[in-house]
Length: 79
Image 1: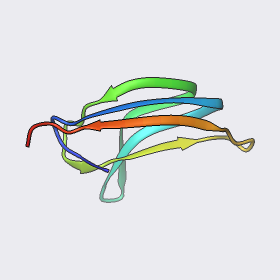
Image 2 (image 1 turned 135 degrees about the vertical axis):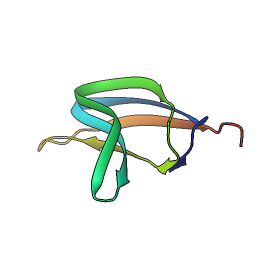
Image 3 (image 1 turned 180 degrees about the vertical axis):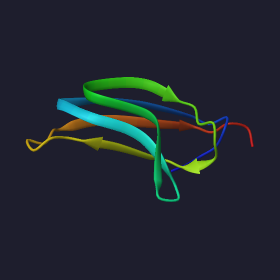
Image 4 (image 1 turned 120 degrees about the vertical axis):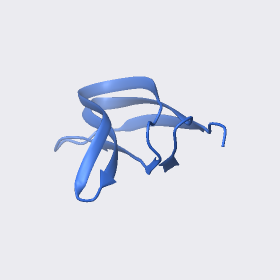
């Protein structure tokens, strides 16, 4: 999703098994991860972007997979 400075992205998730989670964007061939968590089963935070970009939220589970319950809420800043 497109986020810009002033926006607030609230996110929360619970995973059945540990997962890697990140919020990232692409700059050419480079992947920039302002948020990165390894081997977590839950997280609850607010992401405030410093740059206007197309951001992705990504979860990665191991071979066994994982069931993930998540919620995201975008609050747009003043434009």
